[in-house]
Amino acid sequence: QVQLVESGGGLVQIGGSLRLSCAVSGLTFGTRAMGWFRQAPGKEREFVAAINRYGSTTEYATAVKGRFTISRDNAASMVYLQMNSLKPEDTAVYLCAARSGGSGRVYYGENDYTYWGQGTQVTVSS
Image (cartoon, rainbow, N blue to C red):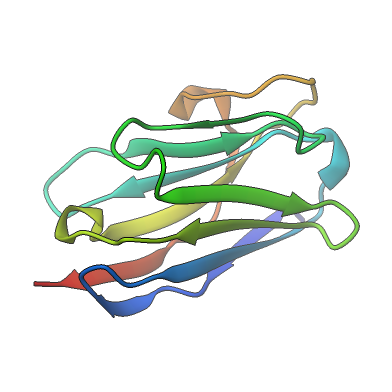
């Protein structure tokens, strides 16, 4: 049974930091590209960050570039999202995603991913 469980969300002040974690089970984690997406109330899900299966290549949405860092620990089957200099527009449910297949590249679209966590709420106060 494939399972992705996010944690680390919460309420944070403008300019603060949070580190999100995603624990993955039921997959050969080291062969899967991973991504983070977010969805704010009344808005569609949007891409945030992605990392290839080796952890050697990353990509970020323009809105978070320079503030967020995606990383992974293949031995622990974990992927992380370090979020710094948080802004009110970062408020959203953050979801972890995994591809069904493996390759060495990064992926940016919702349809590139098969498995999704339930999400963790991040709220940045103004």
